[in-house]
Length: 504
Ligand code: NAP
Ligand code: MG
Image 1: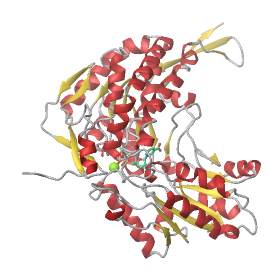
Image 2: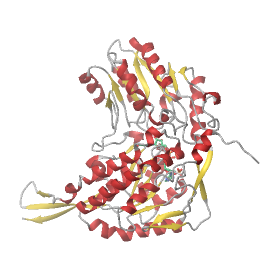
Image 3: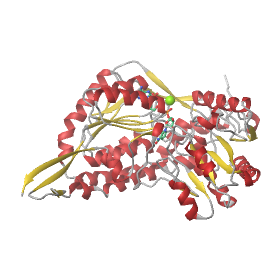
Image 4: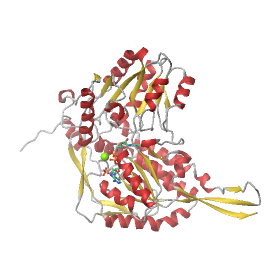
């Protein structure tokens, strides 16, 4: 029997990735076979092909991983932070050696364009190296006199303990590493659960941890469903939970942790706004738009998917936004030139298409895109993929669903504000949301833009661009989360402070 294999599929078959169908977990410094029969598929959303699978961990594996992390905790946390930093630096080097396979695996898991995943290893290495620089802050003795005199306190920064790290699928490496690196520097031990669509690329990080000689039990990897994640969160041997994902799941985790009085950091959803000031430079807007507002095919938590444009320049801005998005190439995420890939899963496809349907029904005007991608526009073999046309809706009003809810797909909304009396109306629209994660201000007068940025009720705001700074706290307000990651503040989330008072 002969079969015709499409270009996209044959190209994938020739990649020979080391991790496809795997049958083990990383527990106590070794890859150990799964005991249960449950398995979860890994599907390439560009071609709709299942190309891998992982085992579903059960209570037995969870107990073993927690026990390993608990028994590794004293030895690891008693090291000086400077010694742990040496491991972090080695991990960084080992991650970089694995950049190419990590990138290809990540792109096959979630359809992120290769131009995006190519940076994942370097970014992860950069995070490990940044946190290594904070070792002196942990090691230096911190002595604080009583303000009234006569006594002093030694402030110890102890490791908080065994940490459960739970990540989503959109940036499967970064969103684990931003937890793992500070946890390890702080002296914590860890159990990682990646999201079900993206369980394989994280193995390259585990390989790097192993090659760096990190002691057994300090880092453990288990794969499993959301239900398994819930068991992790509630396990009596877990001291802290760090979660990135959706707001509804974050609420469940917060309530479990509330009941248990278990420290938790939550990085959740967003619906951020780009406020466009009347003096905007449209070339700047166009050059920063995709990275700041539709990064990773719109599947980035902090991007500003609501563009709030002044009435005095509305049509001009709509045109520039529509043209810029329409010019971004959509195609095979393995192609270097691809700007927009598929969305990550079939479920995500259905959810984004529902939002698009609601926008049409509520009277928004599609100025580019507005429907599922047309098979004839896509390369051979991509017709089974989860492709949605990069879409821009104009004439969006704050009551519409697409203006209020997180879409997490390639859809931008452009709202209008009356700028005849200043920028108040734009700030009101931007702050009229349950979320508070990211945001942007586009404007030529940077002082003015800074004033506006200060009034946006959100954890991070960019002026004419958005980026993550490893040394600056990143976190959400309101329904976008609790606590922060990155920076000294992010490291603090893995510490338990202890004051020892003595007379002097
Ligand atoms: P999700 O559905 O909330 O899942 C996130 C992780 O939690 C996955 O590993 C998931 O496992 C697990 N999980 C599901 N139910 C759980 C439960 N009851 N207890 C414990 N763990 C559970 O999020 P997603 O769909 O993967 O990712 C998209 C969301 O992440 C978006 O809302 C996005 O805004 C948010 N996000 C936020 C940030 C940020 O920094 N604020 C960054 C990126 C993404 P399964 O995959 O097996 O279900
Ligand atoms: Mg989900």
